[in-house]
Structure formats: C-alpha cells, structure tokens
Length: 492
Image 1 (spheres, rainbow, N blue to C red):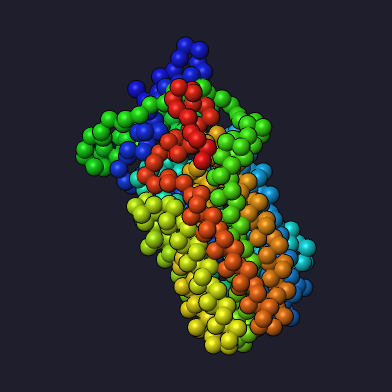
Image 2: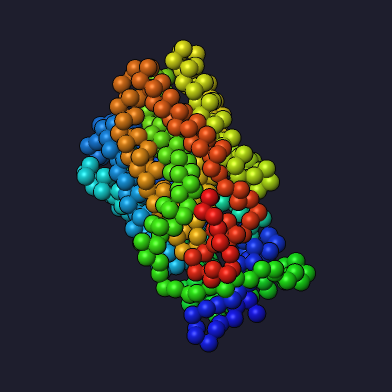
C-alpha cells in the first residue's frame, strides 16, 4: 500500500512521493504540461502586447487618453504591483486550500480582468484592470510552480519547470505578431485593433480553463492535509495509465516517510523555517529574483519605446523585432534546460546569470559607441536573453524545490513578490524616464544596472545554489510534517 493510516487518524506512512518520482515519462505528464504551462503563454502575450501597443495607444484616435510613458511606466508598474500582491494573497491560500482550487480561481480572475481591459475608454479603467490582470497572474506563479514540481518526476523536474516558465516567450512571440496585425490601421481602426488583442487573451484563457479542470490535485498536498485516500486513488490511476501505455510493470518504489497530518501551517512556522532554518536559501532566492526582475521588468517592458526613440522604427513594426527577441528567450530554456538535470543546478544557474550580465554590459558599450542599429541591437538582445531567460526561469525552479512542502507556495509568492517589487515596480518607473529621454547615456545606464544585478545574482548562486538535480523534493527539504526520525535537513 502507498499509504497506511494509523488508528489515531493523524499519522500516515506513505511511499507516494517515491512512486511519483519513479514514474517514466508518459502522456499523463504531457497533459500536466499542457494544462498548467500554457498560462505563461498568456502572460507573455499580455506583457508584450502592452509594450508594443504603447506607441499606438498614445496616438490620437486610439480611444484612450493615455501617453506612451504612462503605458510603459505607470501601467507596467501597476501590472507588476498586482502580480506581487496577488502572489502573496493567493500563495497563502494555495498552501491552505490546495493547488488545483487556486490555479482555477486565479486563471478565472485573469480572464475577467483581461476582458475588461479591452473595454477601457478611460485611463483609470485601463490602469485598474491592468492591476487586476496582474493580481490573477501573481497567484498563478505560486499555484502552478508548486503543482508542477509536485507532479513531475525528479529526473525531469528541472528541464520541465524551465521550459514551462520559458513558454512565457512563446506568448511573447504571439503577442508581437498579433500586435503587428492589430496595429495595422488598414485592417482595424486605431481604436479597435488593440482592444481585440486583449479580447483574444480572454478567449484563450477560457480554453485553458476548460483544459485545466482535468489536472488533478497534488497527491503530496493531499497526504499532508488528511486526504490520503484521494492521493492514493490519483497515484493508482496514473500508474495504471503508465503501465497500459508502456505495457511494462512499474518497479517497486523505494523510500517511505511518516508524516503527521495538518490542516495548515502558521505564519510563525513559515517565517522560522524560511528565514532561520533556510536563511542561506532565502538569500539565494532573493538575489535570483531581484536580478531577473530588474532585467526583464525594468528594460524589456520598454524595448518597443527604445526602438522608436533611437532607431525611428514605426510603432506598428516593433512587433517584428520583439518576436525575434522572444524566440531567443524561449530557445534558452528549451535548449539548456536538460543541463540543469545533468550538469547540475549550481553551475547552470550561476553560469546563465553571469553570462547574460556580461553580454549585456557588452551590448551597452556598443550602444553607447553608436555601433548598433535596430537589427543589430535586436540581435545582441537575442543573445543576452537566450541566457537570461534560462536564468530567470531557474529562479522559479529554485524557490519551488528548496523549501519544505508546507511552505512551498508561500515561499514562491514571497520571493516573487519581494524580488519583483524591487525590480519590477521601481524599475519601469525609473527606466521609463531613462529610456524615454532620447539620451543615449541614460539608456546605457539602464542597461548597466540590469547587467550588474544579473552578475551579482550569478555570484551569489555560485556560492549558495543547492544541488537539487534528480533529487526528490522531500530529500532536498524535509516536509515539516515528517516525524523527526525520518530525517533532518541542515537548512543550508
């Protein structure tokens, strides 16, 4: 049996985590990727569309009295502020009420807010629903990353998590190409095209919501919260599917753990675990999130404005350039993801952060020398972000696997919110002013700040990254519910 319940009904001995980790790759795992991973495509499409339509929204006849700076500055900051507050709000509920319930609710919030953004005729309305769209997306980060790591076998966890988080850039490619069509006034009026892009995002979210209903609750979460029978049914069902698909029996899973079930974990216990027992891991998590947040939220939000300001690219053509950059971003996690499970976390995390930072310093120098045009600037950014996107995706992977099960969603939410608030709220407000002045030196400074923070995070990772490759989540960080005799972690 995978789980045996004591007479007291509060202690369970189980092999379910080991059974999940020893599963071979199957169609069931693909269904998890499709059901959970596709939301990042929507997030990427959202952010890219806003960046690319900034110029058009500020033009007369757009139907919205707003400036380009307000779109890339205030609206971008509000979107990130919504995501940060949403992560904290929904993250706590995810640990209490389960992954599935929350990743359905948060997607529904995103869907409604995106649809209402399309109906904005006043600036305050646009700002409000950009905040609420981010509020839904922030909850997705905690619920989805928790569920992914708890459902995917340890052997594949690194590459799968990175590719799913990197799929954000597939949405960015789609958003870039969609904005080209939407901003073509020979196809759609200036006050209609940009609205259709947001409406399409809502339609896609509805389709994903219907697919996601079939993704199960995390058996690991069910075990700890007194629902071991349901966890057993889910794992038995998956094992039957896998054996029918492979026509081979599964090997007996090795490794059991005994847990004391609980309904919730207090804030005091979460704080003590994350900031005392695992303080080195907390330092690592904060550094990774701040570095990537400044690079992405502070600079790429305004890349369309940079093309228009310095290279005279028409507002309707910025999507072509951003599509190239977005493709490079996705190829990074796709091509390098497997190395996180083979070469290892420490080398790959520190390497991708440091490489992207050094390459961005080089790009800033070339830009300052006047050696770049719109095409070569885009090529440089494509190379920089090939490594940067892999590093940024590894930040989510890192936080989702190095803290105990009971604190996982809240830890993701906290470090995402703190790191992103530091770089993602202040960044767009600061760098919108720097990049919109038309002064080369000020834009160079923006690039250098992002590069410096990526390098600093890479150095921190070189010393503090956890060698989590191919290890079970319970081995990386023992659940708080496990009896002390089952093992201890050092908190390193």
